[in-house]
Image (cartoon, rainbow, N blue to C red):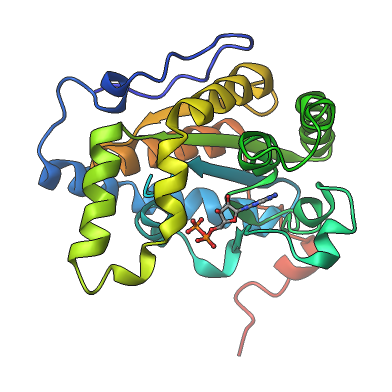
Amino acid sequence: MPSLRPVAPGFVPPLDDADARLPDTPPKRELRERLAALGDELDELQAKLFASARRGLIVVLQARDAGGKDGVVRHVFGLFNPQGLAIRSFGVPTPVELSHDYLWRVHSAVGARGMITVFNRSHYEDVLVVRVHGLVPEAAWRARYDQINCFEAMLAANGYAIVKFFLHVSRAEQRERLEARLDDPAKNWKFRAGDLEERAKWDDYTKAYQDMLSRCSTEAAPWFVVPADSKPMRDLLIAETIRDTLDGMQLEYPPADPAVLQWKGKVT
Ligand code: ADP
């Protein structure tokens, strides 16, 4: 069974349509069972993270429209204790947010140590939509890759592990999902006319994603490209990578205070 590898710093992933699906994807049922089977392990790791509260985990999700970020939040983070999760979504900045530097709203959304913070979109919008739509001068967005690396390195030096997932869907899969949003009354609310404008800029976005991945995949905060045409495969690969990340943090429950232990067996 394949696992995700971080993007090597400086490497430019091709992001071809063919990369959006693994050659041998096991049946959906098997993948969903394997995901569910991770539940206990994830629960234990999260409990240690929460109890010790010395480290935090930040998970960044970026994708094209209909790329599956919401599905990952539901299926992967649904396996965790909600009390230890901080799920943050980033939309078009408000006037107050725009009156600050672009990282201000992001930094203030980082959960405390002990928490798993999930960014549904993130500061990377400031080198994606902002770049593609020319919302700031080129010199401004170009400077942001280094600024973001510094920001993430600062968080890492202060106890945060960071993993970043780009959910890579093919053009055909996106078309199908957008059409489903038009066909299915339960999904109509998800469709925005703007989605089609963004789709028309597919190649511009590809360049922006490639720069984001090659310039901002670092040892402290690696990017992973997730083949995301298959939803259950996508979820399993992400869940396993998060499990491995938490595992690598060598989390332990905090040692008991001897003053507490003296009460052992004496609780009436
Ligand atoms: P989603 O598409 O993630 O489900 P929304 O429908 O609320 O959520 O879309 C959020 C929108 O906000 C997206 O079009 C995204 O590009 C935009 N956005 C996010 N961050 C920024 C930013 N910094 N500048 C401009 N637009 C942004």
